[in-house]
Length: 153
Image (cartoon, rainbow, N blue to C red; front, side, top):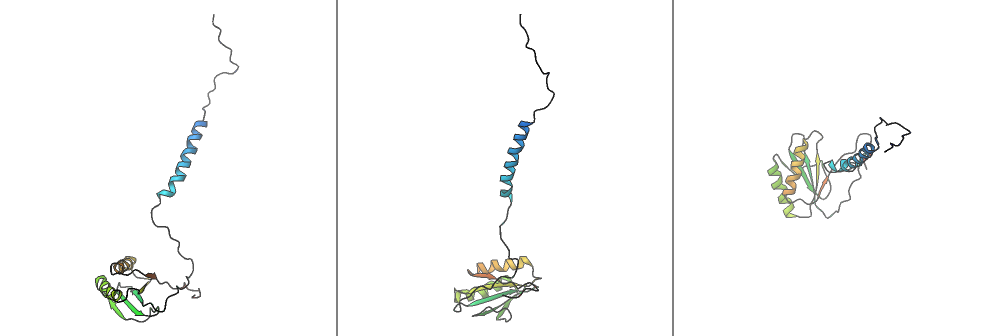
């Protein structure tokens, strides 16, 4: 005769959640690892205050290209950074590229600085930089101004 063992406790009606907690922790780790990889773009750090001026070599020729609010381009050519004077100008991208390419072909060590009006279209500025690159510019810098209330460096 078979005798059933006596149970001290009856069956439990509680759900065992320990495996679910393990699965949730694994998923949390997976999402924590993969989330930073999903961000697209270029990571840059923009200055919070006015940047110091870059030292320039006096022997180098400097071309300061300015983009107007209406999309036109003008530039100054000289031995120092000068955004106030105007040596030449262009209305279209192709005309600007041809004129600047002639200057770069004449002297390959020319440093180019780009400055844009605050109201200038960002796309127009980027298109101008791309045309400069197509024209042979290899040394390019961007000019900013000190924010109001900040002393100029």
